[in-house]
Every structure is written in structure tokens, then in C-alpha cells.
View 1 (cartoon, helix red, strand yellow):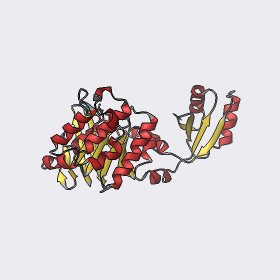
View 2 (cartoon, helix red, strand yellow):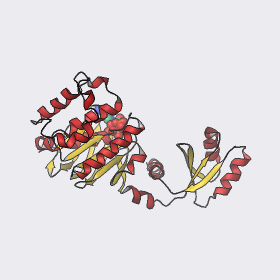
View 3 (cartoon, protein in one colour):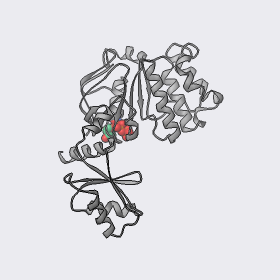
View 4 (tube, protein in one colour):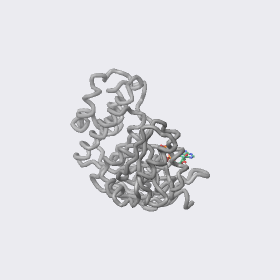
Length: 305
Ligand SMILES: Nc1ncnc2c1ncn2[C@@H]1O[C@H](COP(=O)(O)OP(=O)(O)OP(=O)(O)O)[C@@H](O)[C@H]1O
């Protein structure tokens, strides 16, 4: 279990964390979701006992991050955002190194990493620096697990990794969760949020909401309309110029639109876009996704600053 209470941290003139209070339950797969610079790495480094908070307290399975830092290092596995591997060591040398540091052997804990490691085992003599992004990620995860941690902390593990490897990675996390490991994972990808049991939406060092991804979207009260046309850039600008527009942002192949009030009808937008000579227009109402909630919360947070 991870208990975070009123943690704040500043770097000179930047306040990276502002009174963060959060609890991650035992065996939970918990996501820290937020854009670059939100404070995710800072929070994780504090939990990993690598950085001291200015104020507040945090406990990992009951151990205090300041007083009990040595004990914590034995029960946590950490995969930092930038790969933690020794580029000049081979795959197996990296793994052996991490096992030795924790006073264990690869054989002893092989069971836990088997599903992940077997995919890179054929390349065990290759230097880590010569692996693909997806393979590096699997090796880094194996290294973070080799001492059988009770809590696993992963800082943006899927950034810069291809879509197939991203999907496989989340499947691996689900399997690890079944082995009673508490997992805290950060990501800037909103689609990954839906794979977590609960998430904290974090922005500019503040938590905007904590809940299951499903409840976060269910309790969002706004109507979302998505639109598409042959000219997406012009479409976004035109939608922003619509008199009842509150927010418009690009999401994949669509623009997501929220009105000043929720009485904007899809037909109104359809007619408006046709008049502006947009071709192949599609306008439809959709249930809000986590990215809609996040964008809306971000706007509110900025306007209340
Ligand atoms: N060593 C440092 N010195 C000064 N400012 C820092 C330092 N580390 C982080 N910051 C600032 O603190 C804020 C939070 O950064 P942090 O790295 O924790 O965010 P993040 O959500 O992990 O984003 P990223 O994915 O970009 O790392 C940012 O404004 C960042 O510029």
C-alpha cells in the first residue's frame, strides 16, 4: 500500500508538487495520468526515496520514505522514465547485475519474470544499447522485478514504444497484478488510463481527481460532440469560431467540441460546417472519454489560477 499525505516539493522557483494526498491500495494497478511537467516523476522519485519532499509524509507498505528508506529499497521495484539499463552490458549481464545488487540470483526469482524475459532471452548476449525500444522496456521491467518487489513503480514505461509493445506491456502489468504486486504507473497517454483500476489526474503538481476511469467519465456532466471533415485544421479553427463553442480540441481523426451550454445540437454544427464548405462532414454526439474530462479539468484549473 502507498500512503501519500500532503506532499509538496519545489525546485527553486517551480513548485512541482502541491500538497498531494493519495492512497494506492494493496494489489491495485493505479495510474498517475498527466501531461509532461505535471509532477509525476517528482512524486515517484520521492516514493522511491531518491528525492526528499519539502513537506508532507509518504509510506510504502507502512515504511516511511525518509526514516525507513533502506527498508523501502528492498520492497520496491522502479523503472525510471529514461531507461535504467547499462547500455554497454548485455541483456543477461544487466539482469545479473540487478539481481546481485539485491543479494539474489536470477534463478531464484526467474518465475516472476519468465513471461517477460523469455521474449528477450534469445538476445541475451546482445548489448542493451543495441536493443529496440520494446525490448529495452522488457529488460528494464525484468530488472525492476528481479528482487521480487511488493510494490512496482513505473515512470512512463510506454513512452517512445510502438503500439504493439504498448499493448503487450499492459497485458504484462495485468499479469503481475495477479501476483499481488501493487503497481503505480505514470503515463501521458489517456487511453492507458482506462486499463487501470483507479487513476489520479494530475496537472501542474495538483491532483484534479482520483477515481476509477469509468466513474471519472460517468460523473462528467458535459455533452461531447465529435466532428470530422476533409480539412481538419480549418475545421478546428471554424469550430472554435462558432459562437456557442467553449472548447474544441483535436483528438485522433476528430475534433471534440463542447458548447458553452449543453444545448448545442449536432444538426446546428452540421449546417454551420456545410455553409463553410466543409466536405465529408461527420458530426455526432459521443459519450465523454477520459481525455475529454482531463481537457475540461485543465481548462477549469487554468481559469481559476
Ligand atoms: N531538477 C529539477 N530542477 C528544476 N525544475 C525541475 C527539476 N525536475 C523537474 N522540474 C520541474 O518540475 C515540474 C515537474 O516535473 P516532473 O518531471 O516531476 O513532471 P512529469 O509529470 O514527470 O513530466 P515529465 O514527463 O516531463 O518528466 C516541471 O515543471 C519541471 O520542469
